[in-house]
Length: 378
Image (cartoon, rainbow, N blue to C red):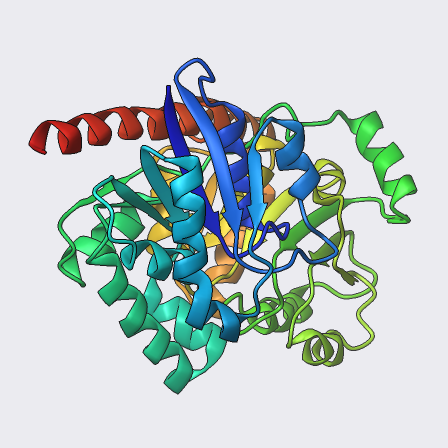
């Protein structure tokens, strides 16, 4: 049995941690035994117990970022002597850096979730973000194999950063949790969530940040839909643009800023359409979750969104990023299209291409293949 050691910052509930959970959840336990090290103390919204419940051997260094910078490699080496892993799999800049510094002759794999040239500067500011980008790319060049969460991410690593040992394994969604609801179930969920709304709900989920560009969406919405209209825009999530979003929404009662929620699936199941106007993504799980719930999608034409619709013909439309007229054109087109056909296309795409079990099976295939290649070369 091969021991897989995963290293992450924490198990805070977020898309990468949820994706990793699904990878481990569907591991063939007759072949793979999962171990996991977190670097810092767990936050209140930790999924530690979820990982514990599926039989992961868990360890936590409980270090601050500063202390981890100085001592983490030494502490991980101590645990390596105990665990004796056959493969190390990391995700995130901190885990990747530590892995790159471990002088051991076993395969090291890193999952890359973003496009560093966009994600880091937009999230952390131009100077800090670009310093992080340079360091992360230099680190990834020392890793045995990089796995991009999409063809877009993998191609970016290969073509822009000249990293050669790269494959892509697309993100996947738990279709046992994310699935469509009928009209009666939607009504019950809207009542439960205090969304006393008749008509269409367009939902947008994720952080209210510059990269997600919610202000563009609110400004465009205000131009065509007012408080008396039967189309409603619901945001779930929070971020540094929350107050600006509230100000931009003004008195428009069909724009609803819900804030952070822990039951995203309920909001998706009671909605009718999903919108993402994001400026950059790796492979957005929020879009895949919405599609698994049978929602037609309206997406900005970034490469990751176009990649999704390549596998989901008929599930929705892409508009030209930042082009308000184009956005409004395709919004109208979505409203007048055959919704049943679009809903079915969304669900089929996730079922056939973006489900969690298939994603895990692809990771397991990578473990087998890469482990064999490395051990035979030794």
